[in-house]
Image: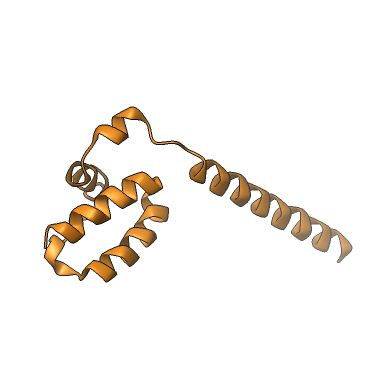
Length: 94
């Protein structure tokens, strides 16, 4: 029983450590010059269509696009700058 708890504790510790490192590296990434030069529509088409058909910008309200942007930032590993450009495009294309 002690061996199982010890293994469980070590595994949990490694998962937490990996999560912290991943989140820290994602948040500290400065956008590259290539990303900075891209428009929201270009980032939207490059990132969103990788995994699914993209909905029309008129599908959701600006508030919902904000929520979708936050969710998809983590799913698609987008930087804040990329997410902001994509969401601004989607909100302005209404």
